[in-house]
Image 1 (cartoon, rainbow, N blue to C red):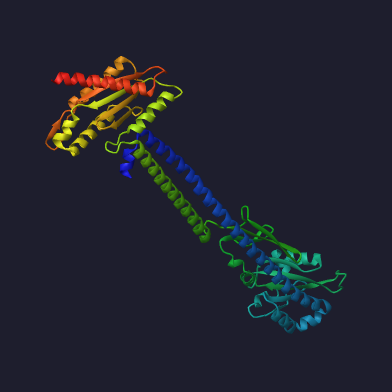
Image 2 (spheres, helix red, strand yellow; image 1 turned 30 degrees about the horizontal axis):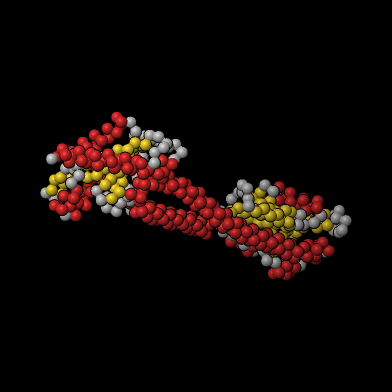
Length: 448
């Protein structure tokens, strides 16, 4: 991996960086999208389940209160028919009603709105003799029942004997059904806490739940902001409201599945990037092997020819110079020191030439000890001479060193300049080779 990145050209590294950055941004969007989709799906399922639970609780509340209210209504009817008999047989009548009720805590009868009898008496002794007219918070419900002429449910209220309860009040009239001659009332006290437990409202998990009546909270910590579910509870002459809001922050299922989706999406993106990177590396290596000299790792003849043709056929047709380079005395190096040293010698020359050109230029080994250099926008004689001097100076100051061997590289160079649109590949190669051979001959004559 490290070697591969090091071998990339600057343009290839930049391209890889840009593509990786774009992939990262797309991956972030993808991960957020997947996570949000999973969250919304789980949230929808959780809300649906919550709605089912809340609907069941509402049905249980209505059924519980209506059932016990119906039983208590029979007691009120007995008192209406014969108040004196009801007072005389209060214990036995109340006992039968209470054994059939589910959530009735106690019952009381109040002639002239003064509580005279309570069943069961044990634990409720303090309520005997209570004059409702002295308790405004309870007397208001007594008056409401009297005005309505039928049962009125109120609460939860604080009881004299302690605790809170829901109370169903039945007005008793001696001239039923005219209901003009008010006798008193019957009060049925529901065990509020037991009822809440039994109806399942406390069993709702991962949600905030509120039971209210008007502006009064009957259950819960307060009114909910934008509840997910709002259901009315219809009771005799009263209306409650049941609300619920899903608590996703503390829902382990939502957190677990959302995190799983996030991790899975990230893993998928990482795998996709790794696969794409491996494909890019494979493509780059294949392309490099096809267009790269196996020994020196610079461009080969195929790539050089393709590069020159593309430059000649480009729309802008920029001027360029073609340098044909041949090593003087390379056969002697091979014969004297062996092919291994000869190969290292060629690598040294290739690295030296590559260090002298720009990223936009080309250096290639086209065979044996022959190299070419293509320099874009270098076409004036002064520019060409500067390059020739640079090459000569470089090899004059950078000897080839291998073990105890020290050799100075001697090169023969020919130049062909493509400064017009009529230049062809063959013409340029022939011209550069001819000048290179002339330079080679001249240097050979100079040495002799």
